[in-house]
Image 1: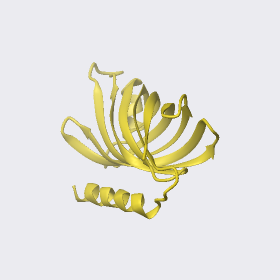
Image 2: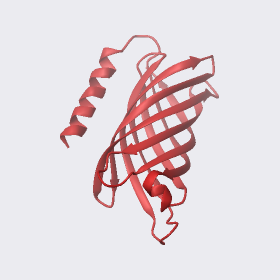
Image 3: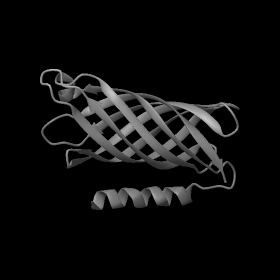
Image 4: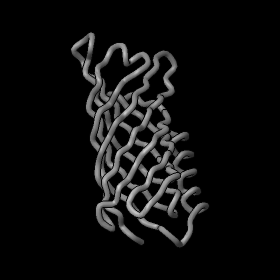
Length: 170
């Protein structure tokens, strides 16, 4: 629990440390897609369904930070048992390519992953793209790769998600 508190405090400090008056807004949206297990769980489980809801504070035109809550369910390949992970992540993003309607970037999520009451800490580097359909409505895609810090098994998986969001200008 102390690790999560430290992670949240770091995110709050980053909000204020990199802030500027230009480009501040909040993006709120959701993604759905495919979860692909690899590592030890890739040998036991098939690809599954992945989703998330998110809120991102755009500190300026290139930096955003926020919270992402989601989950991924994998179907059993060898046994008839599903494996579900719930994700609660603090996310930081950096835009490295931007035009009037298109933004492409990379980021890092870190936080808590839970399965049937058991929780682990992990990280989620990612790439993403956003396309603004109107001034406030956008489409997005992301590819997060999740690495959980578990002692005896490699729980790793990638997501391929598409979604939409609404941008609230401040």
